[in-house]
Length: 248
Image 1 (tube, rainbow, N blue to C red):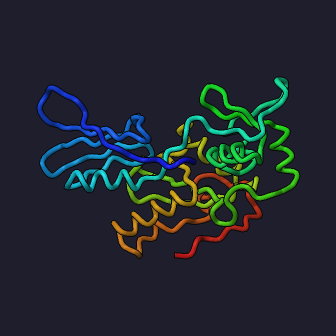
Image 2: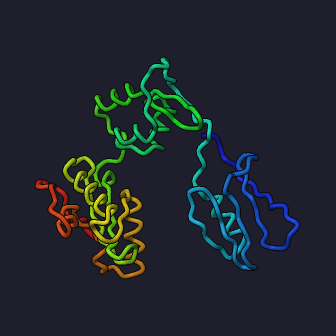
Image 3: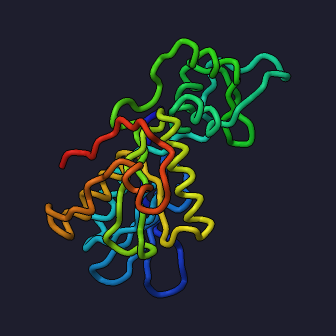
């Protein structure tokens, strides 16, 4: 990825405050990237992949955006384009499910030639044949160990704290089926409350935030095995789970 240089352009307006500064990267405006002044000491940032946040000065707000991760180019390279129009193609999301990788990782694998693919309409498509060849070689392409796990965060009171967090090994088909059945039961109204699915990093960030707000001894922040959560509402089908609760 080429170097990304950020510059600032105050938004032209004939009205009084709020003032607004748009961020440009390499001379091009970033859609959804700007700072808006809410008051004399409140500058709110808006930027792709960042939560809106308010800073006390314009310099602080600019610095936060300047430290944000680079934005991927829209014209992602394809090192090995598919040669045949009849080649069966998968979306980046479908390829990611088969390989246990995020769509961002799939984009990178297409760009560096690990997978054959094409770009169309701003989206990445991957040759099924190259995905299956990758699987056959059994080369790890996604997160491994604890980082590969999925976490189900169940809110008995529809979004209120505390919650129950359960850990799922996506490579254990029995656990995965039970987790899907549990989520479907919530969607169908058979189990009250609501639930979200998180990857390892998001789950640990949520856990850390809860510990800051409720103390290190807050029991609900520690994930439990998915079979223990499901057993509270319906008989689990998993009979041979190897998961143990995470250590604090």
